[in-house]
Image (cartoon, rainbow, N blue to C red):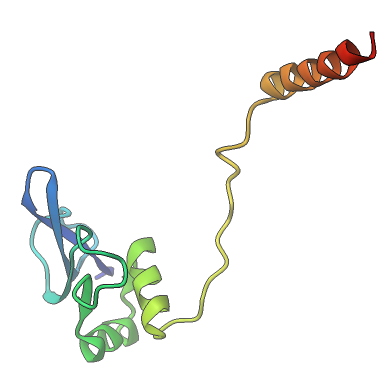
Length: 117
């Protein structure tokens, strides 16, 4: 059985609250899970202690059993010091496209040429 440590969403509309759960990877996001390991409340400030609460011993147990954490849970584990910080691929999604770069270069060239006249 492929197990994952992931978030299960709760809370009302526009007021998210997540449970950190160990579940079979084939189950739905908010469906059946094996064990609840903690909570995550994204509405609290980032420096709040109550933002992320985890039962560290149980999380370590599930990791030793081969459970794979999702990206968000892996970040929580890194912050808690339970996992080494992984290097992530920067996909450069915010970088402008080829045509936009060409237009910016043309605009810069025009701006340079205009004061010289």
